[in-house]
Length: 204
Image 1 (cartoon, rainbow, N blue to C red):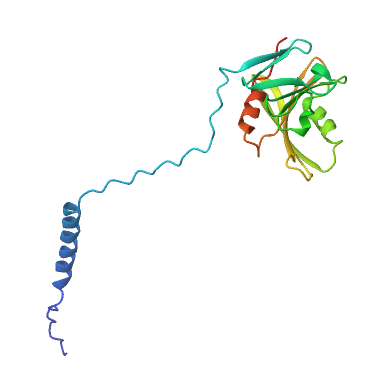
Image 2 (image 1 turned 90 degrees about the vertical axis):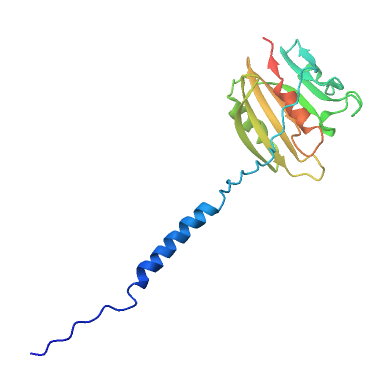
């Protein structure tokens, strides 16, 4: 029987281990010789949240008839809104408009004391009050004002003038509801109006 002659190992077989050794040595040499680069520290994005305005120097206004108080800047005044006396107040800068001018015709904060004989919950009261207006959209949110339960209502309505949106805050006490109305955006004093509303509290 014919027997095949033994095959000689290929002369190329020795190249494999050498190539592997070269790759390993090259990798570790690169790790040793390359300086460690620290991971870049991300730069924090600037905060867009505005800081609350300090009310330390503000003056208090107290309504003894309806038992509430609110703080306003030194250059602001509280006016009776038309003939409604203490149940309808307008808060604004002293130089913005003449006394007794309707607050709706100027940018400012209006405080209304409304009767709630059925003792409705704030959400139901606000819904009943707002559904009487035409072409408005509103969103209700439960909030805290000086530790008191309150309802915030953002209102957008159709109009031709610049004042086409208000923010309303409702607080209830003794079958009465205090409604604070102000313009939250589009005016330079928006942050001041927001902070004024946050200082409201019942005194009894």
